[in-house]
Length: 341
Image 1 (tube, one colour):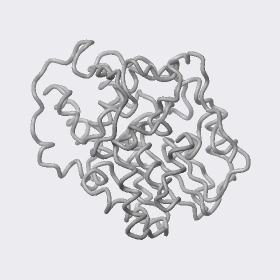
Image 2 (cartoon, rainbow, N blue to C red):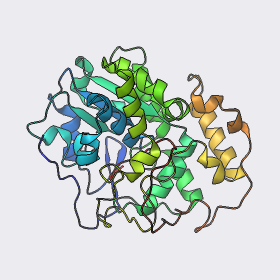
Image 3 (tube, rainbow, N blue to C red):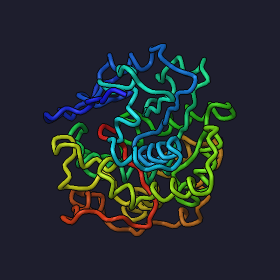
């Protein structure tokens, strides 16, 4: 496959434009690149699309599927940058503008369903949609926005939370995004899986993904997929942890792209007032929707510590990144929204 060069070295403006009402960061996307992704006829029946809202486990899912496609052999994930293994559909240099791609193609997207590639819906191509507790998404996206050169400064935690709940962040409303894609539930070519399910049972989740893709693995290959897709393994892999990106795109001094890789971190950051405000909107927006794994966690009902975090330089600020190189840990993998989100 041709080697895409999707990232520019210059400082990006940190401004957004709208495409059919959805906000996108300037510099990595353009109306033309999104229109190409939406209207292309270049969809193959064996294409595999990974679709997520930003900071919902995209990098984790890419790593897992890359390993599945190679039957557990880690050579590919150790030698090719992640954005080349699963290019983005909607970036300025996107998957549909790249020639000579192998089959099956693995592609990534954050697009909401209403502007997703139209040709997909009349094809046999497959979508794996990965969801995540939106409270954890808020925290992860806030941290990411502090180090990503292409995104607006998120402002204070309160400001960012208000923007998130109104859908005034990159790729728009989390609520609309997940509700839109869940209309695909029950289709043979659609799999919905959550970050929380992968955290709770990585091997079982990998087996489920293998079944959906029609690619069963033997015991040894399955074990290799699981071992190489843990958070520690990904954080130590320079082809997957985005340390290859220049500081103009990711300020590695202010934080790591793969930060924690845990569920429930929101409880370390939300104040009581923020949690209550979020819950009011969540209950209204998700009324009538099925129960999600994050709704079933009994700890999710516990009130977070009432720490003040409404001013800048508070608990939502990115943690300083250690100077030492990251080492593998047994923890399980997290998401990284990619270099662009």
